[in-house]
Amino acid sequence: MEKQNWVTVMDEQDLVGTDPGEVVAFDIELDSGETLAVGLVCDPNEDSGWMAFENICSHDGEGMEEGEVNLRDCTIECPRHGAKFDVKTGEVLSMPAVTNIRTFDIRITDGMIQLYL
Ligand code: FES
Image 1 (cartoon, helix red, strand yellow):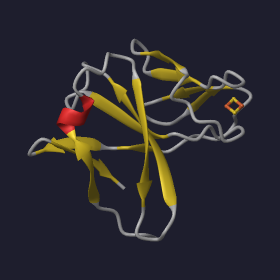
Image 2 (cartoon, rainbow, N blue to C red):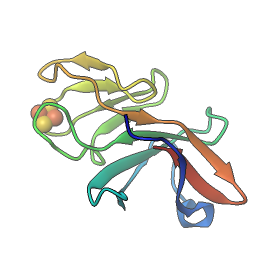
Image 3 (cartoon, rainbow, N blue to C red):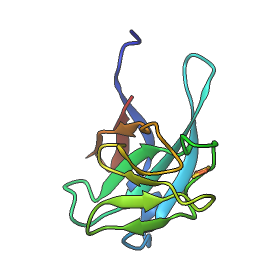
Image 4 (spheres, rainbow, N blue to C red):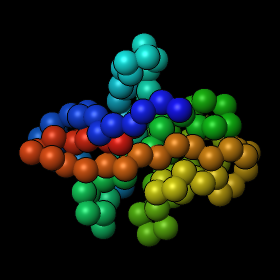
């Protein structure tokens, strides 16, 4: 199993002006050479103010930054075919997806956004 670490992904200042429920999408280059697509959901109810998930729909690989977010039940709906996921746990909640997505713990240290990868 690959070792996990807290990884700094951006300056918190880069996210100033993001609205609650808005998704910020970006890629992370991993040491393995792979690229990880990540989505951050602005959620004032979270300690860090954010939730983080792997931004690839498990149904057919769509990026979900244009998907509909519901902060009351912490869900995101894929804009392509409508699969719904729990953004906190990654659990798939509705078809046509049948596989969960990854989610990541998130923290802010010295003004920098870090994900546990
Ligand atoms: S690609 Fe997301 S529901 Fe089909």
